[in-house]
Amino acid sequence: MKASSFRKLKAALLCSLVVAFGYTVSVAESAQPAAKSAAPAKKEAPAKIDPNDPASLIYLDTAGKPAGVGGNAAAPASQAFKVGMGWHPQALAGTGLPKDKYGLVDWAKLVRENIIKPKASLDPEEEEMPPLKMDILIPAKGDYVNDVIYPHEMHTYWLKCEVCHPQIFVPAKGTNEMTMVGIVQGQWCGRCHGKIAFPLTDCNRCHSAPKKAAAK
Image (cartoon, one colour):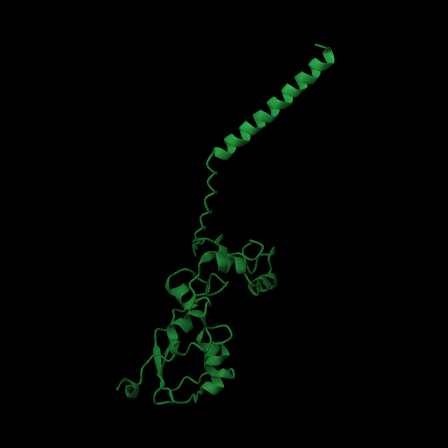
């Protein structure tokens, strides 16, 4: 056999072996069961808030630094004020804070469940006044509209008495001729509710005491 013919035969055999080997491998791979898809990542639990931990998410600003550190030269009060006015979506989204039926943060529930412990003052020497535990019944003008129970306790937890008395509410029975129209316009309860407190559309949250006429 000539050398050139031998080389051609050798090349043809090698090509056949390569094709056959490739086909065998592809058949073997297709015969294997499909790899299981990766298990879905577990949803991380909301970050636990420790009100006693100064590094807790609720005490940090959007840059991850402690907020509201008043007299510290590195973060003067004016800068802390700007930080406090900011929006903290990562903090609210990551902590699982309790919400009301409107999806707003229920700050009263946060306090009652001891999730947050806001300080009364930046001055550590200032004595904190305890909340006033006194509910006031405010009769509604309509005969079939529930009366209002006004809880001093939660309001005086956040605010000092002089914030509301006597400029907004005269502290004497029957002297505050409140109307819903006036409240919606920003008077009396409307100074806060609908702005920094829960909205006025949550009627039953305030009008919670059934009238005797309605009960009959």
